[in-house]
Image (tube, rainbow, N blue to C red; front, top):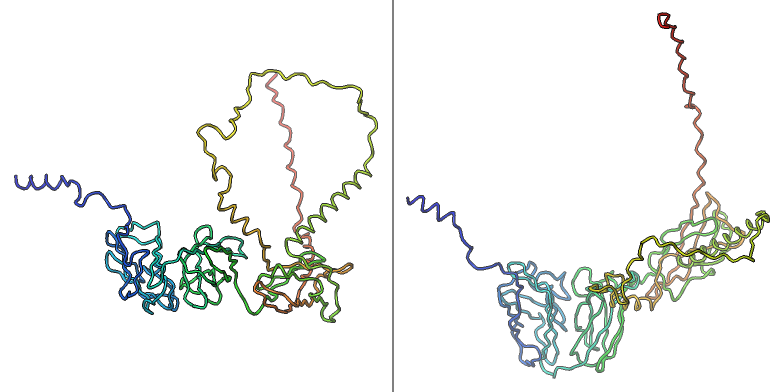
Length: 456
């Protein structure tokens, strides 16, 4: 009986202890110092207190502008303006933040808590928060905003690093761009700022050598806006990377970097010589890829039009069937087949249907980004060179090409050269006569069957 009672108790498990599963992300209870407070004698950590234990993500520790890649909880905290690393420490349900250089007097600090902090059940915070506090002066009300664009890629810079340093100080305010490439600093001191947009590939919160960026000097009184066009800067200038024939009178040059669209190349900056005797070949025009496509499309349209006109003039005219213009034909009324025209929805759409981006209309942010990007020409790393009248590329020949004064997007100038090799025309494939198709053998005809004399 005792064994049967124990088995029945084990079969009826019941609800697990602890209530329903937790699906709510952690929330911030308080921060110290509080937002808007003035704390001249701040020496301890800045504390962020949550309502539950948060996940100690790997990589938590000291990191910053002079360290390596920022990871863990440190990647979710932006403290500025500071010089050097920032220590981010985990205390179960709280986070401690302190710059390695210590808290400086008479400074307005911004601490931005980014989305991504999670509890032990991996419930992630989706909304960030910014805390502004002071170690001396009154908190100002000026603002600085703008948009960052990837100039060469022709798109907005998403999650890009923005640094705004108040001159002559080198410490910068930090923030990240949103999904539309926008950024904003509120409650910053007025003055002249060096604002920089960086494609922070290694997430170390500083600009490295091969990372695309752009900068501008902005004067902030009460508010200011700016647009930054990030691209890779190179002090060596654009150089010839490859040469490829396009047709019998044109070839394409590919550079190592995009060219400055405001300083285009012309035919005087391109030398084209026949090898090995170095005979000059005239150059008629230097075009971008877009210009070349437009020119060739227009030339084809003109050639097609002339061909159609020529064929129309050569075609014989049929005069046997003249059109009688004295009689007017009246179209008979349509016969009612019982079918009805489809229902046309009233203006504004059918009842219960809401128009939106899914109906084919772009979002307002996308339209604004396209209008902004269209303010500047598209940088290109390719040009097409067309030869002068009477010149042509000879199959199997080699040519010396030199381009002088090519300018990249940051103004660096370079002169470089390369050799263009025109491939030989492939000979036609020989006809294989060894395996000629033999005619199919004709099957012998069957002899007529003898007549059965027994049948009538």
